[in-house]
Image (cartoon, rainbow, N blue to C red):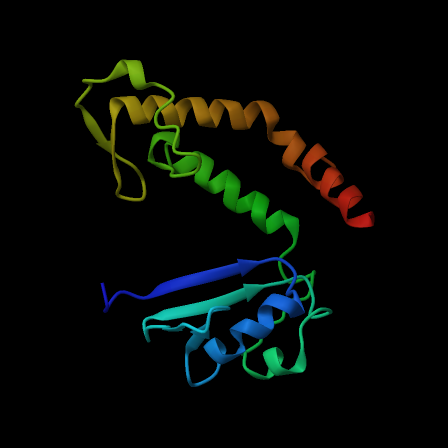
Length: 162
């Protein structure tokens, strides 16, 4: 696994108390010093990413060791997320998605071996074709809630006000 790249993702505010312990890990030494004095080397195939709202709690020492990518809140509007969700719902059977690991909602219909190619070239079993049809039907029922004045966009706008 030394050739495979691994990522450690910190999602949330940067707390100055614990991030100071990471500074030696983030610099050229790539060493994490534990409270007991033991040192752990970070392999060269491992990368660290901090995903934060702002740098309010970050120290200058930490910021100087990190590359920064900043996105304005307008860069990725909610409509982009909705479009991606709709596309996935129409093209990927729920049984193939790893979200939640619940598996097929049609698990009892096992044994159907017929396959059909989708417009994207993927092959789907008859069971997965049924899943896609149900997903498309559900999307048609709730479609207006994903529009510009729909429940989803309005809920996100209200949440942003707080």
